[in-house]
Image (cartoon, rainbow, N blue to C red):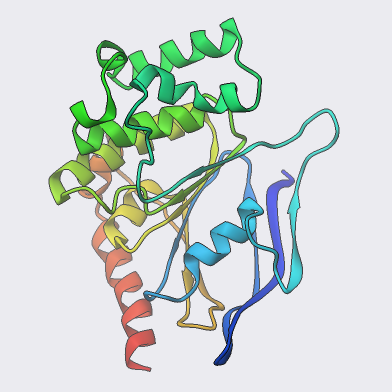
Length: 255
């Protein structure tokens, strides 16, 4: 199967009055359609920078981003950030439909999709509420629905659960991970939470400290009777994968 995304020899540096700071060095990898990829690495190594380049928000200094698309099959990229960025003066329903409004693609079909997603995510009865009336976990679900209404072929997740308390983060990440898998959308997750990466992803890329290169590419194969992100934490392979990731990253801090 051809990859939906290919990053080829991506290099990027930040420039300021003090000089140049190299962030990414020769990053190359592919993502298959329907795959859930997690990217982990030391703090400040350039994970979010890489995601911004994939999203087209930053231009690489060298290398290229290739999407497997053509004129008839354009791949829309959805980007979910650490904060929900819901507009407080709009209802959840109006927030969810913001993308179609801006892109002038609002239609009965989009409204029907929004209704279905709100029902699937357990938010339909809150659709006329303002964001301030919802919990943090509910607001993150609403933010994901806003992204999913645009029907992205590639979903980028930049630590979308980091602002939540631990218990809420555990539940919301599991719920959202299950929904993303059921939808078949290709997803890339940036996270500092190694357990989260193992429980959600099909494969994990480990980056070195800055300037980041790819240190390891680890497939995740868990044997468990219940295929959910929460159940994944009880899989027999989970602890070995966690220990491997922990060693890979802690070595970068001590090296």
